Length: 219
Image (cartoon, rainbow, N blue to C red):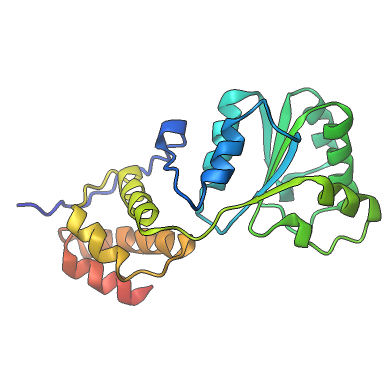
């Protein structure tokens, strides 16, 4: 039997450098992170849709140098003190709800103390409608790198990796079938994998092409 029965194993996220698949859509961001410490500027914003690999890139940076990693909605004044005690900071999922004064203070700390700062977001922070003039000036002086929509090759790797993280074996013909029919979106791919995993557990049946077709209709 070629079909693999999906069992409920814990999901294992692999964020090692060797697990990151470089493609034309993400190579600029990957090359910049990998070039540390020889960055042209020490503050960079990497933006892209959910599931595009921003957190993976952040993890690669953490393997290179000690960094404080924090979600933007968890930032406080105490973050600045913690930032000063390390080599750099990674601010994930930045949105416009952040305190502009706090972001400006963090930015100034990076500049004045020659520290590294990686900011991830869904869209370029240069497009955010900040009101603080000094912050706008800082933002416009930083490096902004985008991650584009995935190619077929990258979609194939993302799907295979998602299955692998969930300890699910899948045949290449199934991946090829999915690629031809799924939206070219990191978020949709992630949604598909999650839905397929839950659906298979609920049905309690072997993984099959029929199941893939049913889940594709759901998403």
